[in-house]
Amino acid sequence: MDRRNFFKYAGLGMAGVAVSAVSKVALAAIPEIITSEVANTQDPLYPGTGRPYQPVVTLNGWSLPWKMNNGVKEFHLVAEPVVREIAPGMKANLWGYNGQSPGPTIEVVEGDRVRIFVTNRLPEKTSVHWHGQRLPNGMDGVSGLTQPAIEPGKTFVYEFQAKRPGTFMYHPHADEMLQMAMGMMGSWITHPKNPKFMPVDRDFVFLLNAYDIEPGSFTPKVNTMLDFNLWTWNSRAFPGIDPIVVRKDDRVRIRVGNLTMTNHPIHLHGHEFEVTGTDGGWVPKTARWPEVTTDVAVGQMRAIEFVANEPGDWAFHCHKSHHTMNAMGHSFPTMIGVKQGDLMKKITNLVPDYMPMGETGMSEMTDMSEMMDMPLPKNTLPMMMGNGQFGSLEMGGMFTTVKVRDGLAKNDYKNPGDYKNPSGTVAHAVEMDLTKVERQKPHVEGELELNVRKPINHSGH
Image (cartoon, rainbow, N blue to C red; front, side, top):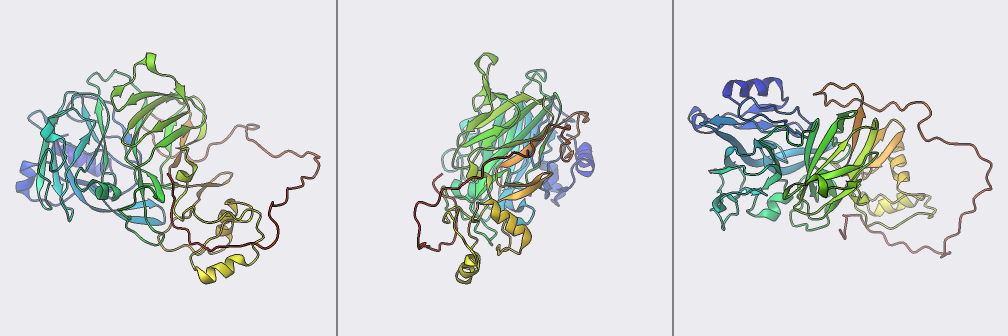
C-alpha cells in the first residue's frame, strides 16, 4: 500500500487507527507506525499493492498496512504496553503491539520478500519469533540463540521470504513466559500465490490466549502456569467476542492459533466442518474427514472450513466448559440442595467479596445478580454473562456465535442481530399430566460442616 492509500485507508476504513507522530527522518527510512485502540472487528484490508489475495477478517482485530520498497513488503511493529478491554466492564493492563493485544495480523503472499521493523517500547528487552516460518536461522527471533535481544528504545529489522502459504503466528522469544502472559502475540497469514487455490467466501482468524487477573485488579499474574481465570479469543471474553457473521451458503474458513498453556477442543454447532490446514500447511482433500469439534494443542494452528447452509445463531466455543466462564474461580464448595437462607449474608460478613453457589445450581447466581447488587469487585467480569433473545446465555470466556444469514452483502460483517426462527421451529414447553417427581434426599443428613474459602482461580487444566 502506498503512502497516499495508506492515509486514505486509515481515514476511511478503520475507526480508531491512527498514525503516530514520528520524525520525518524516520518516516523516510521505515514505514509509519500504525496503531489501533479499538477492540472491535475491523473491515478486511484489501491489497492496494503487491500480489492479489482474498484478505482475512481478524476477530476483534485488524490487519497491519504495509509499504512497498523496491519490491519488498515492509511492516512496522511496535512492542509496547497497551490497555485492552477484555469485555465491557473490564480492562486489563497488557503488553502488545501497535496499541493492541494481540497485535495486528500480518498478511503477505507466498513468495513475497518481507521486511519487518520492530521497535521496542517495553521496559525490558524483547525479540519476535515468526512461529512456523521457513527462514534463515538468524531471522528466527530467539534472543541469545539466533540474535541479540532488542533493548528498550531500539529498533531491529527482520527480513525473509514468505516461502509457504498457511496460518502462522508471531510472539516474543525473550522473557517469553512473562511477555506472552502479558499478551504479546499476533497472527500471520501467508496467502497462496495462486488466488484461486482453495478459495473461500469468508476467512476469519483469531488466537486463543489466557490471563490470570485477580478480581478487582488490572494486571495479569505473569508467573501463573495453568491456573488462568480468563480464557479469551484475541484477548476478549464473551460477551466481548464479536460474532462471526456469514451469508447463507458461504464457504467459510476459520483459522485458530493456540498460544495458551493448554489444549482447546473447538466446537461448532449446527454444521460439520473439515480441518483443511495445520501447522505444516494445507491438508489434501483425500486426507480430510468431517468433524464438529477439533482439538487445538498448545502452539498449534488449525484452519477449519464448512458451508454455512443452516441459517441461525449457532454457538461456537471451546468445549472445556470451565473455559466458557469468566473470573471468580471454581474452587468453592458445591451448594446444590443446601438450604442457604441468610447464609450468604453471614459469609459475606466474614469474606466481603464472597459469592456462594446457588442452592439449585450456578444459574441461581446469574438470576440473583440481575435482581440485586452482587458484591463483585471493581473491574471484574461476572462468571457467566450474556443475554440472548430467549434469556441469559450463562456463558463467558471462549464463546461466541456464528450468525448465518440469507441476503447479506458480500462485505457485510455487521452483527445482524438475533435470528428470527421460523414459526414452529423453536423448542417449547408442553403441558403433560405426569406423576409428581420425588427427589432423592441427600445421602448425608444432619448438621452441615461448612468450610469458607474465597474463590481464587481455575485449577487442574
